[in-house]
Image (cartoon, rainbow, N blue to C red; front, side, top):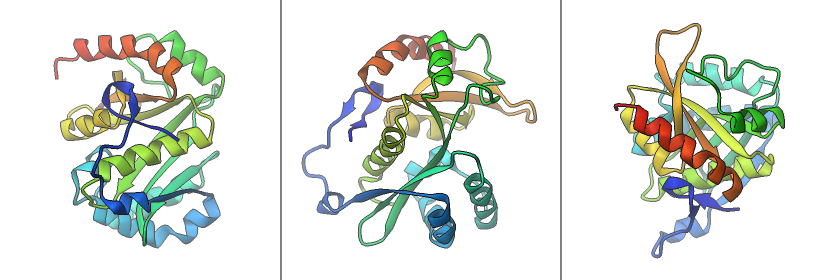
Length: 221
């Protein structure tokens, strides 16, 4: 697999990365294995809150996370990838965005046609969490996890939502290769969100680069 750096370019590991990263193993986990790992995943969530990499997916409370994890596991199409060395060091989970569901309901303005086409073809996965245990190369782990999850499921685009006011979260995601596409309102919430997408492959990145740049320049910060 490949991973991406900021600006959507293929990620290349930097020289001198810790040897523990050479031993990093990534694997897919189905819903039954995820249920069995729920305790360890909750521990990982608690630990991940101590590192800037977790800023993109902050959630208060151990029990709240466990409840949300349980709900995500039951979601149709649930998918998870985990990263291990001598223990669990990271995970990411997601679900497919289907052409007949309402995931994009709330996008401010007209949804770009390129994203509509990817959704209609089943090429979009919504990543709901990326958790990484504190480590000097935790951003590298996050990049590898998100791309493993998307590539294994033959997705062309990852998508996620982040609180507009959470600037550390947005900065972390952009450093992992995500592109800001615009604003989003959930019908049941007054919180203004930002939609970010992660292209998989150079053709998809090229189709979205200009759209993301326009969205970013329109946002005053």
